[in-house]
Length: 374
Image (cartoon, rainbow, N blue to C red; front, side, top):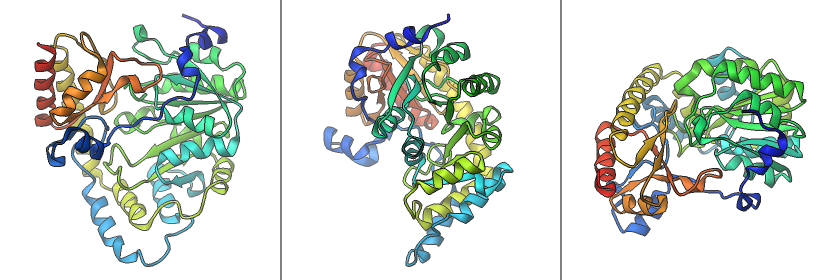
């Protein structure tokens, strides 16, 4: 169904017109204090980190690099940029590295100063926060549940009127919905026709690499692609992210950065992770298998409606219980999940869970059955 710009804006709940919330998963220390349970007993389904752990090659490289912390890291991050460029077959000059992709999410609006930015919702709350921090206005495009919270390229094109930047996540967080390469190309074409710079966060695209826009980004000044080592490579404690863009855009972003954004152990770990082919292959195979098994079992629980996912997490619609109450009851059992009401565009009928190991997933399924009475 087509929507005008006015229709898009009118679907934004009045409460969300104020400052959007900044809430994230993975706060295990807070859970230990809140529930009074031992940290080792907690299983974190609230943050979508590789359940196989960090890349072994990355951990070895980080340990080895400890001997070099008595000197400054490379201010230009030349080795890391070269490794990323080699991985994708692009130029180092087209790579911008940062202290996690979140630092780059905030850098982009700060450098380009957009006045109005289109952000499909529900999605990662830092996009709106970054725009507002830079003095810009967020123009939300509210995605529809009946469409599986998928982005429709035609709706997206109509919503571009009056904006100068658009930010979207693919696959989207928290819905897991993948916008295909063909659809993304259509969206990007609409952005170019409307003079809109498109920023695509591909933090979870490692599970659907064929749909990436990395190669397209280096050919246009209107496209920036973000990637990170956090999720797929299991390195949230080492803050390494990167942006890929054409040479001139990348240079502008680097000029806007503070110096020494990545420390030496983190840089070396990231470089090693890119060559850990066995780990990457095992991760893709494992996540696909466990995600399918988890989805099948979730569909058997009364009061749980899982959404299809192309990432390593699943959005659930819950009936008969408030998401905050369910989150609390699971937390008391040492199972942390993400309360969906913290995402603009969702409410207290949703939670998001990560795909963990087979045994951990079974533990969550058992708890859900007991709490929901299935």
